[in-house]
Length: 408
Image 1 (cartoon, rainbow, N blue to C red):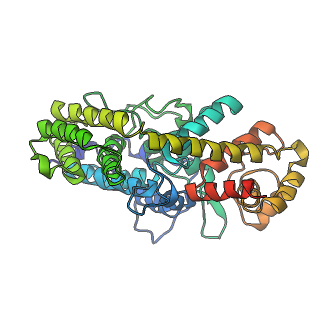
Image 2 (cartoon, rainbow, N blue to C red; image 1 turned 180 degrees about the vertical axis):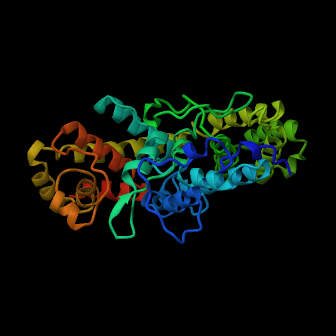
Image 3 (cartoon, rainbow, N blue to C red; image 1 turned 90 degrees about the vertical axis):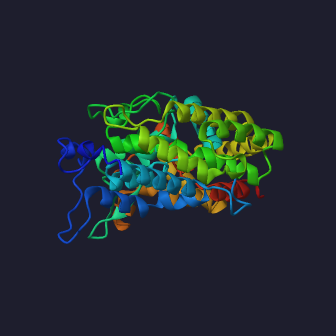
């Protein structure tokens, strides 16, 4: 096995170890806990509510009617599997890649990339702010997701820097010849775009590439299952793959594609050269992505889905924003809850009370010790709360909430 990265892995022998495992607030200790800091992070993300909701969020195609189409939670586990294999072969810390992978999409919008585009547009138009799911995943990991401490009080997850960094830096394209980690820690909330900087760890770099390997072949597999690709288009794709892989045309499938990408990456990567594909497979990665962009992501059936998602998310956002009334917001929300118990009721009880300054007494009664992040009388804070709430919805919940809005 390769193991050529063992000397730079995120482990206690690395001189950057203390930076890798640093937390914003020191996590409570357990004397009998056998887990490493990254294993604890993995478990905390695994038990989070945002992770659970990924099973009902779209990856590319609305999964509500077909049990065999990839959902967001399946994608997360595909990324975890690919990155674990790569990290294990290279001698990197698999516990760190596992933790980054399982948390990397917890802030993804409902309805996949379509939902992200809608929320990005709303944030720019209404809040003069940016929305991108990597940033939102970090926000959810830091401020939204909570777990009970040993005394039963809900507190923030308090993840390590290396995991938080890997979450916000997991996206961006990999068209360069190699990926290498950056040299310094930074304030992660000063990152302004998905591709602005490389991860701080080699493990984060592995997850970034694994994200691409995991979705390219699976998106094509789902498109074939749904009858979106023509015979001519499939022949074009198989011919391109055949040139790069030497695999017989009839044997080409997602499993072969992922396997060959992983083997090529492991054979081509070194600490000196970086995490990289050979030129042949880098070109193939670009060609497969371009194929999907031209024949899958712009298909007319997805065009109908885009309009559907846009209508649902904008309607929910506008409806909830209409309930803001400054100091009288609490009263408006309680009245709105009577008319819209699902949408307004959950927004008030599960979101506003937990994350805002609306009712300190209620927070104390509910044993909430997490950070307060919204000053609810302020309209911009309130609208941020609405946007965050909508971003955390599942597809199915958003559809039900929209049905409640339109049911007279």
